[in-house]
Length: 304
Image 1 (spheres, rainbow, N blue to C red):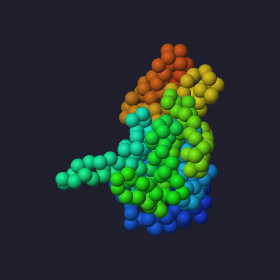
Image 2 (cartoon, rainbow, N blue to C red):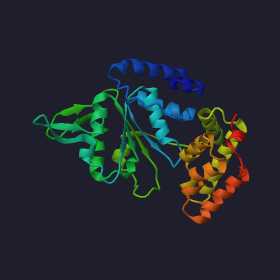
Image 3 (tube, rainbow, N blue to C red):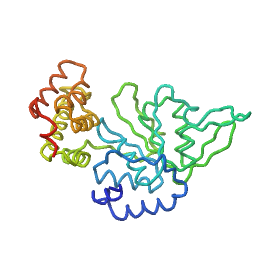
């Protein structure tokens, strides 16, 4: 299904969808088709989609804030796909510095040339730069972001030229409080974004996501998997267990392994239970699984 068809099915405004198509036509000549993502999963949530699309259309940058398993990266990738823009994924880890982001000198054909970094490439080629875990960025990286995200939309490359951002360029940041190494972002950086507080996925939307991804899965079992994830979520919110087992990617991957023939409980252990390294937590999660899924449950019983 084309992503615009998906958005229409989700009830996103026809006016916004028409504006997305106009955006595609306006900037189609600069499109790098190799980098345009083809999402494995769709983000479910009409209001969030409409807020995010409106932000992009208004020429603003977007910051997605929320806990684990709220679909921040799925939405970011979906936006790049919807607008048919090339995507650059930029992770902020301890060694990410200005040279990593903008570029560094390299020797080529007997000359010193600039090897462009992802921020500069996205800026010049009208791409969407996904700034992953932006609140882990160190001060040197933040200085680059302050300049790049400024309303002037210009990057000064030391020793080279000033680069103007393409009108199609957008930056989408993601952040999650609570991870080791994260911190509050300052007001100057926050002011450069429109910010969406990402809601936790509902059981109904998770069931739709599972059913769309695995269309041969029986509806009752799609509901059971969604219920299981919801119960783990409640345990995490209540402080009974850590968020290690709250792994939506792990759940979806486990269902995929079931489709390949791995027994249900064994697959869930690989995708969810074994993410807990504390024996007590692991047993709690195993008990939640055992209540819903018999140990001998096989692929043929849950798929048509």
